Length: 219
Image 1 (spheres, helix red, strand yellow):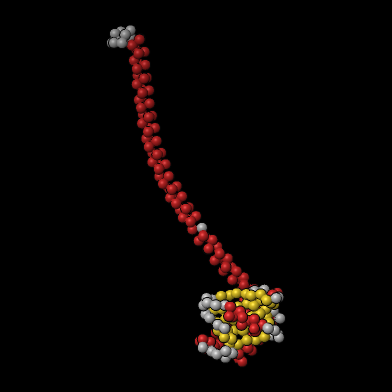
Image 2 (cartoon, rainbow, N blue to C red):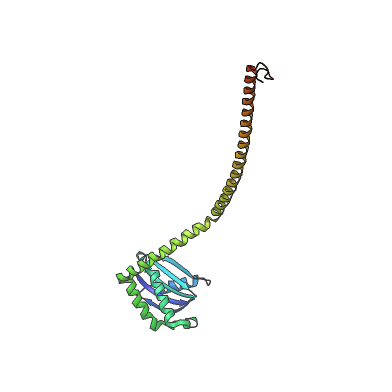
């Protein structure tokens, strides 16, 4: 079987458990529960020989299972999520004050059924593979967003560069207008100078033909 042992506990108080084989998983599970301290929600795994103890803790309620290492992580954690939902739905706020093994007689049968289902029914793997793929997509999306956030300084720098480029473009347009104006006036002066030179040349040609600057023979 992929999953050999399971329990539900509040802190270190075991409320229900089930074992599919004769092992010392129960004592190891209690050591693990004592090791997990603090109030934060967590998903964690511990190795013991060729077996892995997987733990899901949410709102102070811990669900633990021991699985063969060949089971991977997807199926055991899908099992833990399923058990957590069923336990909370069945007992509600009673789990906050229940004594040790208060739900054992009733809920151990649920643990037995779900251990059998997640260990041997191929449909469980198909469903959980789909859930796992959806979760992977969600994780990838979060990763991409985190990468974007990590590049915040680069994005800000890009905005600064864009602003600088806009300022440079404005200055370039102003310089272009000034250059065009300067060239226009230079062309006007050059054209005027050429006209004056041409007129002077014409005058001297006419003066030469008229035998003097005063144009005596032409007047």
